[in-house]
Amino acid sequence: MRILFIHPNYRSGGAEIAGNWPPAWVAYLTGSLRQAGFDDIHFIDAMTNNIPDEELAKRIAAIDPDVVGTTSITPSIYVAEKVLELARDHAPRAVRVLGGIHATFMFKQVLTEAPWVDVIVRGEGEDIVTELMLAIEDGRWPADRHKIRGLAFREGDEIVATAAAPTIKNIDGLDPDWSILEWEKYIYIPLNTKVAIPNMARGCPFTCSFCSQWKFWRDYRVRDPKKVVDEIENLVNNHGVGFFILADEEPTINRKKFVEFCQELIDRGLPDKIQWGINTRVTDIYRDRDLLKFYRKAGLVHVSLGTEAAAQMKLDQFNKETKVEENKTAIRLLREADIFTEAQFIVGLDNETPETLEETFQMAWDWQPDLANWAMYTPWPFSPLFQDLKDKVEVYDFSKYNFVTPIMKPKAMDRATLLDRVMHNYRRFYMRKALFYYPWRGTGYRRRYLLGCLKAFLKAGVQRSFYDLGKNNYWGPQSKGSVDFHFDETRTIAEAQMEDWEAAADRAKRAAERRAAIRAQTKARAVERSETFKMPNGAEVMACGGGTEQLTEEQMETAGRHQPAAE
Image (tube, rainbow, N blue to C red):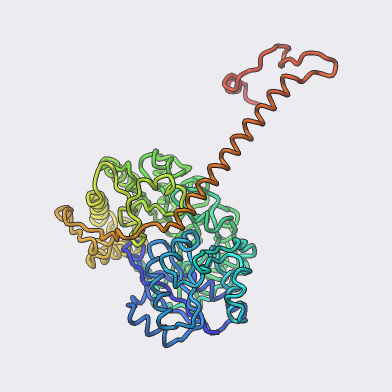
């Protein structure tokens, strides 16, 4: 059976300005399929190779696959749907499969607007895709589709979702096939070297309201550090990779495993051959302050911190468990360990003002990270914060949900002004860094790395690809009046998806009411028991010391603060 995977050609001027990123999803799926005996697997990276639809259609027809599969995050969903539409027209006998986080949670929306999608894989893909491919190969598709967990599909006018598949418990059994990628195409511009995005853990124990990764992966699992280093050693020795970024939401959560991972890299001499970066939380940097130089010895050179917001009210709204002042200290600690720091700010909520945007710049300059990014708040339609803000969401063109387009319209300014103020922050920050810091601070590797980052920014700026500025017709403050974000206003939420949201909201409301009722009932029973309880000898129950009044919680706290320290 011939399987064709296609990575959709979507660009937004965001993360891709630093280089071409290898689509790790296809390596992990291909590895699992090869373990199951499938060996006729093809891959087209339409994004990295910037393949237009006409050319992609010809390639699909030439391969003549039995299955065409693609993936999608929210902004690339329409391109992914188009890929499978091309497959319908140019490989009509192929089963058309869509996966990824957007399709997982928005399957009713997708199957309504793209009925040519035969099946959606919901959630973690390796096991589900393997079971699906075995069914297709054995001729059990579509007859057995109800028996496979983790799918969604159309059945006449009805949209059917099978029961959710369990998460992969033995993630040490994952064996990605990195050979399916065209490694000469994946270059990290700052170091001009091949780049990879391996996976050490899946899931996240935190529930930031703007995020959805914790919902997708469901539970937090960490791989054996030695197996992860085996994978990295393979990437170095067989594919010439010189830089990697761990795909984990926060690889430092499990400090024991992370330390083992770093030690294994050192023991194998890999820091001399490859450097790497991570995303993590400010709290972990505080916790590991005595280990940061050890991490640097293991090759960790770049840490992107989710500082998220200058104003504490935003950190609280995002459920971030940090305080504003902690961000500055974390950046200082990393700088002292000779690790490059990147501060991430989320801007563009409805309460954003020119003053709060200026505050983020002043804080960024005061904190002095090596790099700073201002990302537009993007209300993932399956995140908790979206449900809280959905009455204020005016744009349902998901192709613009890309961290660089202002989806929300702040009360205090229009979207063009928001974009202009963000660009004002970028211009000031990087102009000052370029003139007074990057060329003069440090020597050797540090200078080369920072100048490489500056090169990536300049390249994207000259090409007008950074932040989609060329597409939006932004050329500076003087062009605010002519900025056009090209929102497709015909895009709406499908009725089936809306009903699903409302049903989920009703379930959440009923669950909250049940919890409140149980708490009230438990409290009432406790009061009743205390009122009716008698000592066996009939004596009245007295407070400690023979009194009749218990201390209040406030009094107990006060008393506790005045207790002498234990010796």
